[in-house]
Image (tube, rainbow, N blue to C red; front, side, top):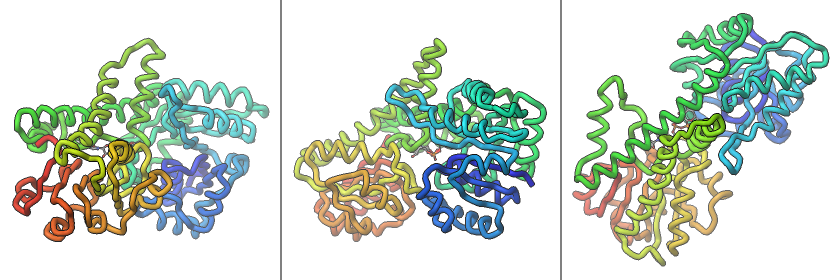
Length: 430
Ligand code: UDX
């Protein structure tokens, strides 16, 4: 049993805290948002994540998991302090590390004995050095400490499962003591541990996410070639993906990646490289292809229905991917804004993201379900591949639409089936 303090109860912090508590550690989660802490204390989870409510409830009841706004309280009672605060992008693409800096200072000021400070937030390489310098500066009692990097690779929607069954655990350390503590903490997970220096660990996170984004943009570029050639991108990536050196995952063409990680991390990695004197042109193209993919999707809608002005377009799916209510950098935002700019009326539905979406999208009709969206729409655009949409009654859908036009940004339907049912059906790369 370890005593752990997690600072920042966003996606990463909350899930990590809950899972570490479930592994029988004693965890204090700290956040400066008092409303959020109040909510969590009442057992209300501010994000939608399968299984998370239950784990939080179970471990709060067992008194292994608690919440507070007081950093000092968390630091004084714990040996391991995780920094999991957000590192949002600034206008120039670099990460805003001010929260990390503030937290590092508060941690230093509260330490009354050895502490291991572990950075879990996604940060540029060399942040560990800065955190160590900051802690040294404010470490008035001159206690022993170590800094480590332990990047998180969880995906939204499967965050609990990813945390409990990771492909690997990366620990960047500069002392044997830090390595030992982290190996003991993660031992029960039985996952391969990559032990390296702090800088390499920091780079592993940006490199992994950028590489995944690259796979997606590669497939989206392939989709263009397949459309031009009259080939089928889904079969092409299947054929490629069976090569074990390539792998099938993250090769789905569509409207590109969104979310809180890929857009931010790719931009940050380009900047990090630039600041050190390397022009990461390859990643700039990954971004460019991703941006273009959204524009092309709107063009596809225009090409199919011709004049968009005064037409009603139904949008199925708003979240950046299924099984989450997260709308950060969601392609839907861009696509809806472009269609509205062209003068279209928009009807929308998402199984989980409606609440979040109401605060972010204006001038659209929020519907109760996919059929209400389709009712009176001149075309339907599929933006997020929720299972709920895959099971829609296509005959019913066709009957209630003004025109049976479906533009599928996620390739969830079989073109032959759709055409057989009387739809004008367009998808990506086939
Ligand atoms: C990602 C990483 O997977 C995770 O390891 C990291 O810690 C955080 O960033 P997440 O943002 O939750 O996780 O989403 P993910 O499931 O990876 O999907 C990212 C985006 O890529 C989504 O917009 C998704 O639609 C898109 N995507 C994914 C594709 O367009 N095609 C694919 O083949 C796979």
